[in-house]
Image (cartoon, rainbow, N blue to C red; front, side, top):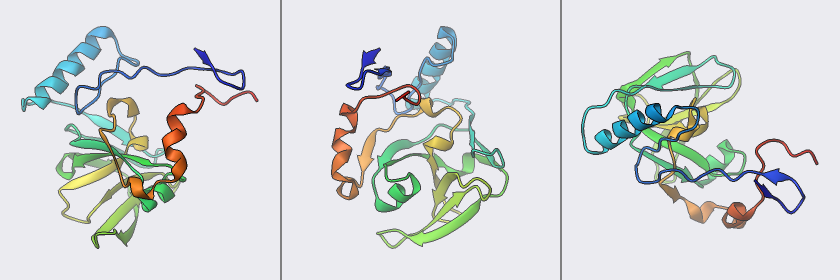
Length: 186
């Protein structure tokens, strides 16, 4: 625990293993479970077959999803649209092959043109408003999933940050701010 300037005790989470595109942590798992998952990630990195199930959903539970394969890439995006979707911050997104998706529930969608001119379909829960996915429409091979919608957000870690030209100037100072595990008392 490290005290912040306001006298609150705040924890700094461990960085974990950054050597794999798919990041596994020990959080809420036994050491042997962690070792098996890490070996699976190594096999996946080497191109071997791996059976996985990655689950997620919206805040209210009306939409649930799962993927039967590992994500391809995870990154933080500071484009202006992602800032709208994440209340002014970068959006943390992970990319999956669409073929691996199983979906329960019917998300709403909103389509708009990206800066490149591509029409992007953004999908969300119509009940609670949770942003879930985006893709290039029916038949898209890849799907961007909002990491906040994953049940275990710690299994992925951004490997890059994009659209930094759109980021506010204060984004560089975020790592220096005090962190607290829960709502501060004062």
